[in-house]
Image (cartoon, rainbow, N blue to C red):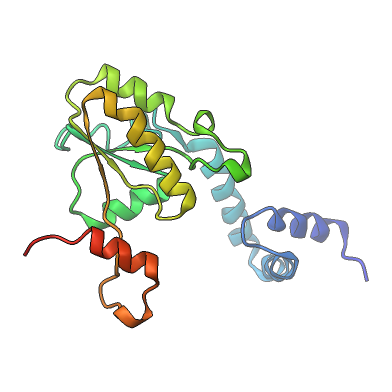
Length: 199
């Protein structure tokens, strides 16, 4: 049996979202049919509003509804440290921690030769421009993901930034709090040993 055209379009739209396969898309489409019309209208307006009203900060590249973003415009932040992250979701994760009071720079991706993504495809050039324009920055914290792409990006940025004289650091990787050694893989254990500190 074929779905009515409106349902088929809705299913197809849902499959464009990451992690949504055909079965989940069908389930979501039928859920939308069961929703109250006002809720569906609010959902649609929220989608359009997010797409229309959210942009990228001209300074750090984070998502924002005003430019500059709330972090860059906060005069109480430590303006000497910039934490470089892959994605705006990483900024949100760091902010939830409430310990970091510096600034951010969002790359919008990571170097991945397998996927054809090079340094020119991520937000690196604006980082260099920012560092040249702002002499107050004394440290760059590379907080890219601890995977092959994140490591490649961190290594690239480290080499690129060394000549500037700005201190370049990498976040530590290791065991999660509450984790057991016996369940950790070799790479995680190795990173935990490398990142050890004196007590």
